[in-house]
Image (cartoon, helix red, strand yellow):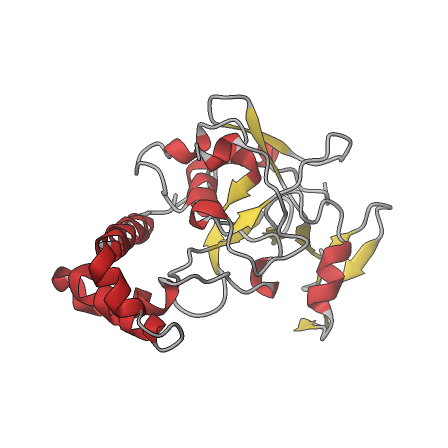
Length: 262
């Protein structure tokens, strides 16, 4: 099948944000060569990451808004309270779906950047905020260390900038889930016992929907394949938990992800 990250996505998260993408990637991003968006070189094979819609804080004030393609402000909060149709309003922001959402809070002279990220095994239904103080924080939000810990190999592919773990809608979007999501919390508790016990339980659970599935997996050796898949998934999950965010804001990040309020 080859490496999915060397291929253009066949569908995009702005069309179906609930769909799990190939190889457990949560999001796919469109690229528009004519859009005025921040573009970040991504890996070693010529790919780039486009920054998607930006949620900005009104200064002075506390309300949040996005800007549409005509430069008009579309507020998603009023008096600090989220509007009931905020999830719809966010899609009207410029560059929605071209890349991950970035929230920029505080005054332009001392901004705070956030993205929302997760994996299929993240606790709860929602993406989690990640404070972005440096490019390493951004890389973590995008990849959740699905490559190596120090240098995510997931970046080094022809279309790697079009796949990621960071949400196009931030807190307004639920995380796509797969078969392993239901056992993520349980497996953390099992700890050293690991997937050798979890996989038969998963097979039994599937048997409730597909009669005989558990016996078929034993007979065909599929349980071992499932065990290997879970081991890989848990390895990525544990790597993601090891990330230590940068403690202070790298001012050069403002040149990479620009603040439209300036």
